[in-house]
Image 1 (cartoon, rainbow, N blue to C red):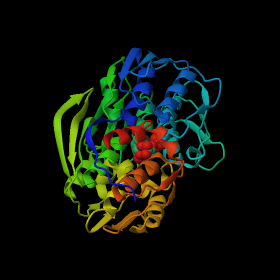
Image 2 (tube, rainbow, N blue to C red):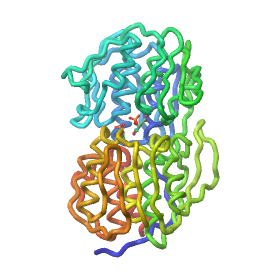
Image 3 (tube, helix red, strand yellow):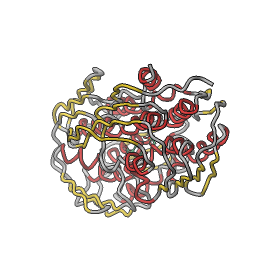
Image 4 (cartoon, helix red, strand yellow):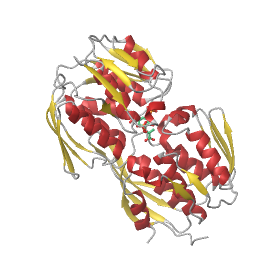
Length: 423
Ligand SMILES: O=C(O)C1=C[C@@H](OP(=O)(O)O)[C@@H](O)[C@H](O)C1
Ligand SMILES: C=C(OP(=O)(O)O)C(=O)O
């Protein structure tokens, strides 16, 4: 048992992963130089940079700013080699939408996890638009071969609320004849719609439908990426639950399609105050002041799920320390992330002593059991590694997490930042 230390002081989490990916992609397709500050230097976003460099786009990564010398909508060139999307589902799916309309053929692949994630969800609508996409192992997963074609607009009813699916279709829609529409069961994160609008595309949203009319051109932008609420989630959770904590997390994106964790934690009794609310590069941003307070259980499902999908592992950790029962439902999407996040969370939280039961589309957690440190397999899933680090901090016994360096995918300095808040 180590001493449980409160989190105190101030912290700025790194830039938003979703917004960082999009800044490179849209910057590459715009005319002129797009300047991005607070870009996330995580491995996933670096994979996106590498893919666009391989298609002839000059990108200067100076760490504090990234300059993308865009060549316009028709400026990409055929890569000499297979594009490697690494561990990044966002890179793989969004780039597929763009490649579907290019006058050349491309092959895409990624690491062992990416090669197991479902790509049928983008292959179906993009094929309906006229694209020729094949899964080279014929299993609906990468590697993919994409043979660009002339595309036509469709109205796609997506069976899943997924910003990656929606964005792949809207990006293909940049090149289609006529309007392209996507309707989803619930609204997923809308960074593509907001940022493409800023670049000059004609995007509109009504209810759960997003539409795009093909523009003549996109224009380079200045983008200040807000801090990633998905990264702030680990600090929010630790500070909410470790007695004596008082932490100010500065410059966090609070887009309503991403802020579900704030709403859930506030309903559970957390003491979180939003300060200095403002709009930054078209995205709502605030500083989050969190003080420790006892939490109670909650029911999390329906339209809330897409607004906190990547935070569910750490929310499950919080639920183990809350009084009463938490039910997570409608979250079957967690099974097709970097790991099966339902199975992995249930197995590993149970190993630490929690009372957790797996369901078809989520889990049921009875909070209040004492947890203890054991060996946890991260399955090389960054969200799992960070969630169990937080579990260890709260219970005072740090699990030994195998593959813990996978945090580099979305938060390279995670352990260092945590140490600083606990001094
Ligand atoms: O569009 C994006 O940037 C993302 C969308 C989400 O995936 P889905 O669209 O598959 O839900 C999320 O889990 C991922 O981390 C990033
Ligand atoms: C699911 C995630 O990312 P991606 O789908 O881009 O791999 C994530 O970051 O939790």
